[in-house]
Image (cartoon, rainbow, N blue to C red; front, side, top):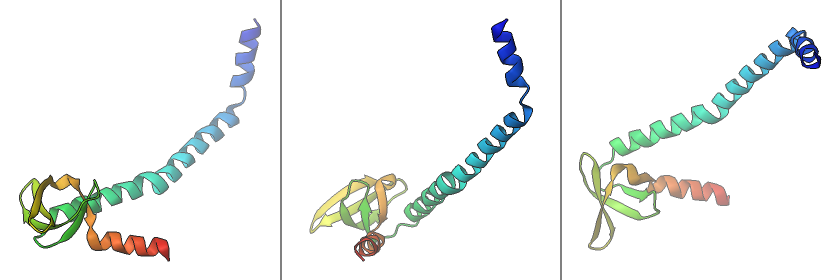
Amino acid sequence: MNTLSILLQASGQGGAGMSTIIMMLLLFVVFYFFMIRPQQKKAKDARKFRENLQKGARVVTIGGLHGKVVEVNEKTVLLEATDGVKLRFEKSAIAMDHSMQLTEETAKTA
């Protein structure tokens, strides 16, 4: 009997339930615009960068290796790390353009 009265009292507050739903929706909208959408844009830009790689570009891999693009295939990239040292990587392992990283480092130190 006590449990039934508690449930009836809780269901009597219809306005509180609606405000909870509205708060959850607002939270989702804020989460989308500040977290999900920027991440999708960043992933799209990275994919576009990898598709447009060209010979001679200076890049950085996700492992931190700096190199110059020597050859671009459909799924792989041949990088020259230093004189005569050539390494083959998957295109997905290329993180960014070398000049982009230098710009980001300069902005952090300023």
